[in-house]
Image (cartoon, rainbow, N blue to C red):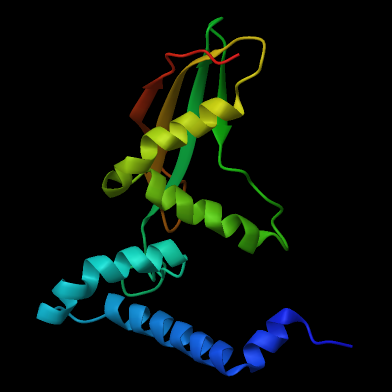
Length: 176
């Protein structure tokens, strides 16, 4: 029985060289994005950071000491229809057990989609949410992206959520 293509590739000389180069690239990018402040770090920070994000291998250690994040975040999209009705879209919740890793990407996406430095994805996000709600009895006319946040209390009652509408998309063209 012939070996699968993946195994034949891994065993070939070219495959081994390409896989080795990939490993060296990934390790090099990780090292480049974690260099201490220096001229080298300033020179490679932006291109290495872009490559790390594109490959989906970015790491953030903000949940660990000595300075863990002290706020909780939520995102809501308020969708308004031509007939005046509204609905809300939120990041999907998964089961508490087993699916945690599946929904981890949504939580990482949340950190980006509400951040000022990633404002280039605000409009596409609102357009995507409008498309999710298209085709109903009334056309979508507006999508508002709302950032909810609060400072976490270590003990006692939690503060109420504060909200900020940080992007509004007026849907101009009604698609059939």
